[in-house]
Length: 267
Length: 354
Image 1 (cartoon, rainbow over the protein chains, first blue to last red):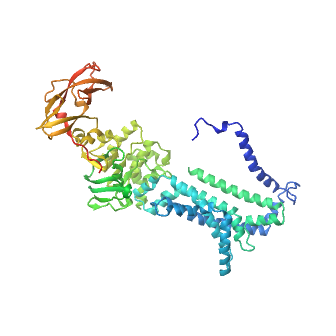
Image 2: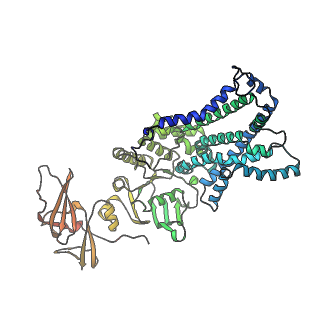
């Protein structure tokens, strides 16, 4: 550890550097949002203030279909992965040490380490075969894939919370005549709720944002918001993309803010 | 009421195996304030956790009211615990914390509400019923923990160093409060502490533990007056130890000798409390020795006189301070001291961990 008297904010240039970082990070997004109110059709060519592209977006059936797909995918994948992650976190923190516990930890976090493209290519081969064999080409494949890579995102905050939780609370509940399930429902779960919520929201955002996996695994005509935007960027570059991106940004910000409020309140 | 028979606990396996508790056996009577006293690592907390059921024994049995409860999970034992950290549920109010045990037992609301109020009245916290437990002071949390553990009327209340987190003044108050609660409820208390003063002032009986063994079980008075071995003598109160030779009921220390009937022949260790050392000759039936006053330490009510015997053995004598100075001793002075035979105890070496 550094000495107590060492204060990083006193170094010359700290303030300038910090401000520069924020500006570089957020200016592009500010420009994106600003141009979503542009009335002109061609990107980067300012012609005046207008909500026209938002209007156009909500009447664009392809965008709406993609948005619905994305929401179904994100909700399902984050709910399922949060349930799995909670169970996994309980198993790795609330049981006696068992053989292979370390391996389970690694396997659970593997999607964080392995390049997504590798996983996507691996799945393309298998899922292609299954599609051929079964003839099914609905959202199920995407849901399964998203659930897989969402699990570590939900698992990490939940596990961190469980590890930080005073074990004597659960011991006390058992001492006070509570069975295992009653202890979980009355003590563990309420104390874990903020972490479960933030794990869920993290998983939701990760799924909503995913491009690589979705693009590789989607069936023809089955777009999610990111794959739709990617396609639009290639084909017809209009200011509508800025409006749609801004809506997506708004949704992410709301989710992150919601997660922050939820976890802050309980602590 | 509670019979502990050959109870033992080992942790780890193979070379890493540690025995926290060696086959311990004793009984605790109904309504007793029983204390497990010893330094950290002596096995007292392990024994408490075994009685609560948080961990299973490696051997032996625990018989409560004629039934072996050693294999019973903690939620089925009529035993409740006050934890060292209190372990109050932070997301619940004081009232909800206290109601927890009765709710877990599935008792009807009509029974729970009055019981909670009664318990909170007993610990004088009824006015804080709707507070979050995290908003309370240490002393208040302590009393909530007590109320929570008492509300379901357990057969035994276990207290795991419950006063160690409190400051001195509060600790004294809580000692009296605990004793009052125990008397009013008539419950059996098993109290774990490393603080000998706490144990002496509160307990009916004390089990002194060390190295996973029970060294002695006795009333506070007996422990102090007749410690079973050197460990107990050193742990309870202050003690002076002297090496002596005994033959035919007479012990010999340097130039002094005195009749001591219970001394076995051969080398023995004698123990005497500082307040029993007399700083003059002529005490009848006493071991008389020459000593040098090494240091005088003033403690307000009394003065500790540090003495060195001819063979280099160090002794401490405690003298009450009289109103007008009393006897005047000087550091470096040579005096004759007397150790009365009735205050001298022959102490054995303690049982050590195998």
